[in-house]
Length: 249
Ligand code: NAP
Image (cartoon, rainbow, N blue to C red; front, side, top):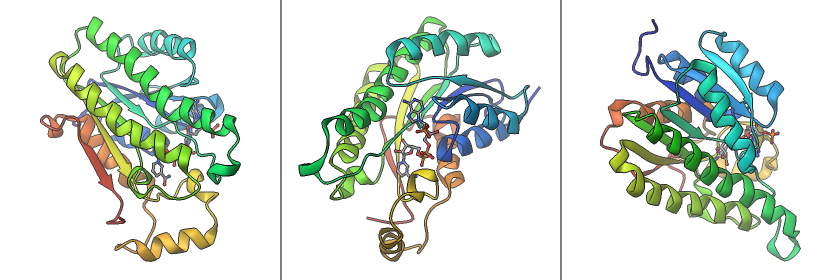
């Protein structure tokens, strides 16, 4: 029997094949949870799960922007550890940056479909399962972004979806509180993951200069806050939007 703050819990993590999602799987497993690493890139999700071992982790393919894919993932997740997840982390996310006057409609739609609609579909379907299974002490953690507050040029699609995630989180926290499901979101600053690897070096240098801690964040530094929100250490934290940015404003 695993020990740790999250022992006996099953966690479902999207975007688990990379960056913050992968680090979250590692930290939640370290704290005793069994982890379902879900990503549209199955091979990447399998690599995450393999690093943790078959007893602690399993991989699943999911496209969070597709209702039918998310529905199948709920059934598959239940089957993996014969228990519905009581922890859900919505980390799947994409950027398609570009100036608004030149932004193709599909770049707006794609970012919306993954970041905001995907968060809705996963939250809705997994909350239903939590309620049906009468699970207690449940926690859903959504990934917003400090870009929801900075509103950078070239990120109309991304900023709008991440601001939407904050409002969505607050509504969900009000609707689900009575079922023992807490819903919170995190606003990471600039974190050293493949998503930020494509940001031009000049912009990254400017970010580092503006950040009081003078560096990018590490994915584990977000995952530790997610683990806090997943655990009963945060039992009275609900509907919160927590900035984890090294002080970047
Ligand atoms: P990442 O390294 O790019 O990882 C995101 C993962 O999500 C990738 O494996 C990606 O697969 C997967 N994914 C994309 N679309 C999906 C879909 N439709 N269904 C399932 N999985 C999908 O990004 P990250 O840096 O870890 O970011 C994680 C979350 O934190 C995102 O929501 C991001 O917006 C947010 N965030 C990140 C930062 C940062 O600085 N890194 C800052 C603020 C907020 P593909 O590789 O195939 O696309």
